[in-house]
Structure formats: C-alpha cells, structure tokens
Amino acid sequence: MDAPRNSHNSTRLVDISMVPSRRLKVVARKDTVLGHAVRRHLEERDGASRTTDVVFDSAL
Image (cartoon, rainbow, N blue to C red; front, side, top):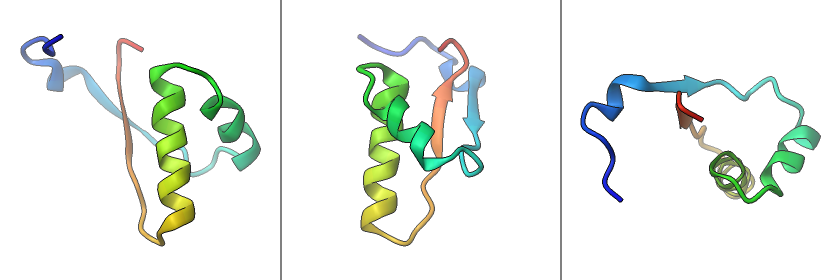
C-alpha cells in the first residue's frame, strides 16, 4: 500500500536514548511496527557504533 500524500508532514522523531535496554527488548518482541523498528534499532546498535534514529508516524 502506498503512503498517503504529505505523510512526511505528520512524522515525528522519537528519542529512545533514555529508555532502558530491558524495556526496549520487551517492545522489540512485539509483532508491531514499533516492535520491528525497535528490534532493528537494537540490532544496528549492537552491530555498529553509529547512532540510529527511529522515526514513527504520529498515527501509531
């Protein structure tokens, strides 16, 4: 399914740097858009030293 036009207007950046790793791992186990994004963030964080921004649509 295509994203609606102007969907970028409602996108927010969520700072998860202060969220404990334990809580992130719980969220990452869920089969949701948020869970997949957090899981990917954790995989990239563990595999590289660069910072990854996780962006969620405000509709979530």
